[in-house]
Length: 247
Image 1: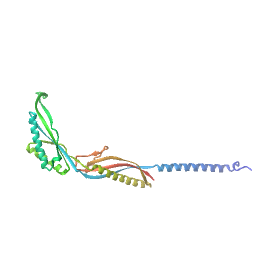
Image 2: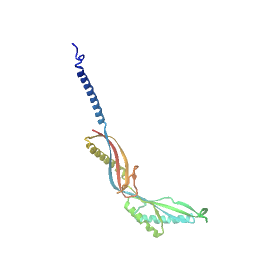
Image 3: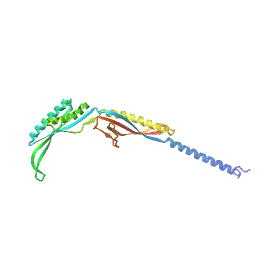
Image 4: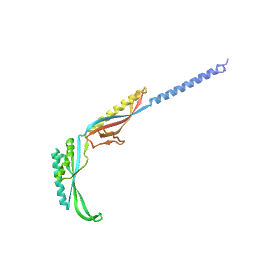
């Protein structure tokens, strides 16, 4: 009696069973691959946090210059102006510890000829004294800068730089804000994952983005970060880029 393998009537049935087993194995394999792909899926998001701050330290420096036919004459004149300038600072509420004088700079002045070119003949000297003030009395220093023009009435010409404003607790604030930016990144990732029927898993990597310190209400941004010193009131923005696994 011939076996059913040898019976041509059963050959189509055997072929069908064989193909079915082969197809099932293929589907199972592809299913495992697809499952593995899903297991490796991730979601990258950007989180941010903002906080307004007010500077707690200010600095300003200005310069007084005097010209004289000789160095001693110019020196006495510039030192007299410097003395009046420091007295003005103290009158505005600054202490000795907050005021610093820098070395006097000397420039030699040469005569010009009838063509307007400089000659080797010295006609005098210009001496410049720089006085800097650095204080935690931010409002007082700001008022000082606004009032310094009153020295013109005393015959003192003052050339002042732009005041600079700083926040001395910035390092601690950065750590706090990076934590808030990370929380914001996680919240964004959750919302995006849930919209696709997924959940976020463990964080896979994260790195800090640029740190922006801008004048309050400013819309200025930079790829390299901003560290504003021109304004007393500022806004600090921290950015974090994070990647989460999907479940």
